Length: 98
Image 1 (cartoon, rainbow, N blue to C red):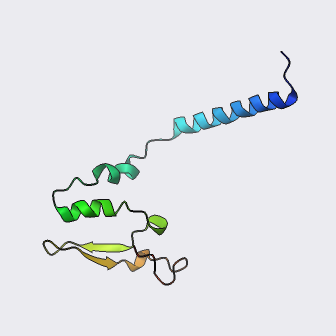
Image 2: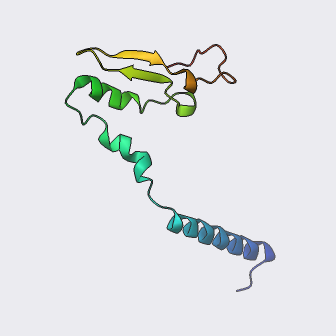
Image 3: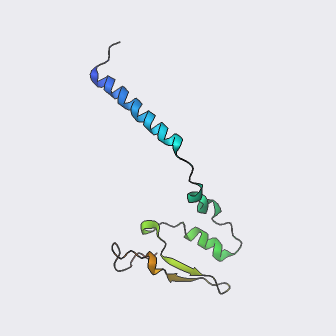
């Protein structure tokens, strides 16, 4: 069986891509620290902490969660804006404080 130049290059290129992606997969490690919040979400008996454990996983611009939580008073959650996490260049009017 004789392969055309195009088929030969396609086979070699596909093999190279498969080998490169396999090697990359083999050297990467599991991001245990990064996925820990998802594993721990909802594992609290305090309903405030339980709700907040899910809230920190909610997507928002740049995943910055620009707020500070105060649980000092029982049965109460107080949220404050963390001005160090604002995005003045991409959100100058702070519309994305969710």
